[in-house]
Image 1: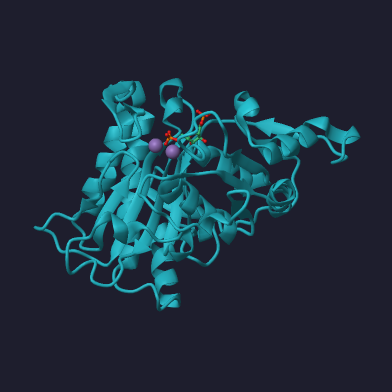
Image 2 (image 1 turned 180 degrees about the vertical axis):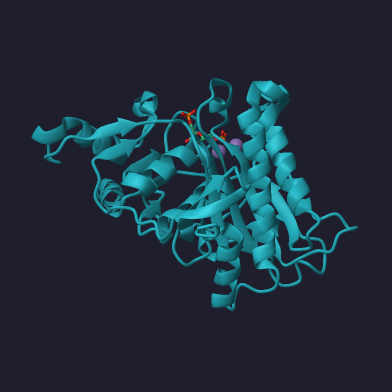
Length: 339
Ligand code: AHG
Ligand code: MN
Ligand code: MN
């Protein structure tokens, strides 16, 4: 009874033993990431009590206003992960350039990419937010010389691990190290994430979709077709009624899809022609694509599997359509038919 559930550290050590390609200090790196998420969970839950809400008064590289908690969550990842000797460099939504591990610390063989606080427009209204992370291997020679941004530009299929923390009614950690997707819940009494949702599976069929419908006039035609067919309900070509949700926090949307199926879309749109979508490939789309694929779902741009996209820059954006396999395949088909 006293030690009934597996905690995340035991889970990770066992995964590392099982998989010889997870070399060296992989499980220790993951423990540092887990500690970052616990620290952020603490800050998020203190909110106004610790004067942590509101704007930081600064902008990130993408011209987005930063919240105080965006900046603090970024610092939490850097401070918890910079000294362990497991990483060569980090990169984040909130930093224009990569963060090489300072020379006073040993450099390791992994790279960490993260969105320190996802859905941060929800912070000030006390709704769910999260953190997203992706672990890559440092290419040969990376830890010898100084790592550069080019070392990070690996397709998502090469991720060693990916996951997110959801700071919701309970704090959860969902991760994959390439052997399924597993969920852990933070037990605040003992300060540990305990395995509560092993081997998550996304139902292939669904009656629920998520999209920011205020952008409808800007969507690409295959997505307009898909959503209009969902909205037509039982009397339309789909022959069933659909439900719609939009939390404006990708972590929360992906979590809902892992729990009960569904499809999430932030498609290519014509709202801002300087970008092919809103979400960022390296620290939003890729880790979520791995989590979803490892749970039997699919993640696509509409015309290509996200995990196969070759990144060309650290902060590049990409259209994202992910979730229940049958729906994502249908939307991919609508793209092919529209070509
Ligand atoms: P972030 O807070 O890290 O910038 O990400 C927010 C993202 C994502 O979580 C969410 O799905 C989407 O932006 C919300 O977009 P809208 O503002 O169009 O609703
Ligand atoms: Mn985000
Ligand atoms: Mn963010």
